[in-house]
Image (cartoon, rainbow, N blue to C red):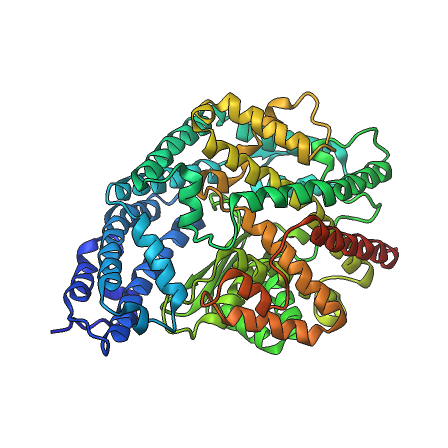
Length: 573
């Protein structure tokens, strides 16, 4: 008798105890299969996956909303220790059952990518890696707990890292310098602890790779992420293109900033400040203002996108302001059962927060657009294209920043905001190359990387190659430990090249929108609706852009960005 599965409420399972999920997994493992029933079997398996994933995501959100809530942390740890390991083993058994089914290729002929991914995942899986991955999840949680707890008294006020970082844009150079040194001091206070944590994570990851029978953790990560459309060599080609086409553009930007600020050299606390005499952009004061401005802008771009954001606001799916104890960063999570997204960020009222909200909203729209795909795996696009969804939205919304469109700014300030964003794209790509190249070195030189001084030296060499324009004298220790300040390096190794590839795709979508906005938006939404049912190059093609990252491509895009910045400078006067 089939066990009924009703995934309309996550309350039918306890995400802290596998025993409440186990009957559903066991029924799927035992249910007779035939060509006529296998699709329904897949549908029920998908529903169980969605149920477990959503329950875990709810716990993750609760513990990141307040890293000081010990009960929320323990609930999440219970999930990753008591549920995830058993779920991984059950998933493997179900995959093996599917792959052993005679005629599976014919039955799933309409889903070749799903079958390819399951074969890859089943081949990579090892029982002995389950506890290791559980331990890595616990250690990643520890990184979040350490960094989420950073705070310091600055000018008689308690400030977390996000609030200190906001001061990097203060017009008073002394305020910037003191905020920066306070910020860096917090990180330096945990230097030994973070070095030790990373070395332990590296040891575990190397064991995971060895257990899986692959050459190193880089090979394991590329297969884990399903990177079938590019190789490490393609990443190095991308790095070289950035060095040739983007680093000189970043140098030009920094040189102009240095001259406008009247400085002999740009110090780290000068990198983020706008060099004009105009006051710093303060587009909003509280979450409600950010939501309303975003709603107005999205309705201008496309009424359906505006409707999606209205749903999120009405259903309390937005947590946008920073506060003490809140985890760092921002994210958008898709709830697979409710078919709704949730946005988390640390807004402090800067324009960068507006960009973060627009970025995460692009992810949210991806959830809405692909929600009707029948299986949970089909709703999971490759991360490189997930970031196209988000980064494109940052660019497609830019023409509607002005208050006359319901946005945040006067025309002159809207131009300043767009300049800040476009300059950020130019300076981001070299940083992305540092992060990605660093991880290629770490996981192909694990014995050397076990010693933090070697990690520091490698990071510093890459920094000098891609980020040569900031004067860090007297703060060498802060510069070389920059890898501590990138959470992806600890919690999601090799997940960063996606941002660079996606930025190239998003810039192409934006370029298309300059000549035909309606067609560009239609192609964008068409590609989002495909979810994970197409290959990465095919998803780019559906959005009417190319999946390539060579020097010629980057040169043309960066020339367009620089040209647009110069045009906006005239509008900002």
